[in-house]
Image 1 (cartoon, rainbow, N blue to C red):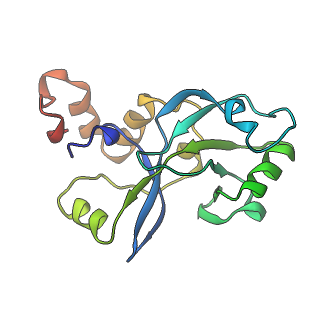
Image 2: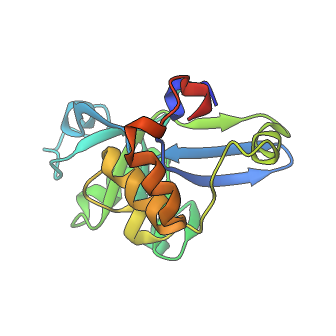
Length: 171
């Protein structure tokens, strides 16, 4: 795929239906900290000290992946919940923060678009799990760890610069 937004991206698929798909890129940390946007949600001090992640190229609200099923809009997979509701996000943060990742932006696909990309071999797919989603090392290293868990031979190809294509659309 030629879109630079998805180079070495690890994407957690949040929803996928006949109407399209929505996911979050897990390994694109931003320089912006959560407390820099917290004042839009609350007048209280921000209880977390972590970077926001760029969830993708589409604009969206502050989104939260967390581990509290009782306060989820969507249970993505075991131990991973998704919430965008402003009140729920505020409550989750103020109620003794647990395991959380904060996102702005998302990756979106129209009807049939993701299926087409999958059929063309544009994606490697594996089951989501909380260990990957909440990996504290949200950088390019996460991509290599996920690739290695899918297929060690793919990881070896990715690590050899002589075998990497010059054209990023072949990546």
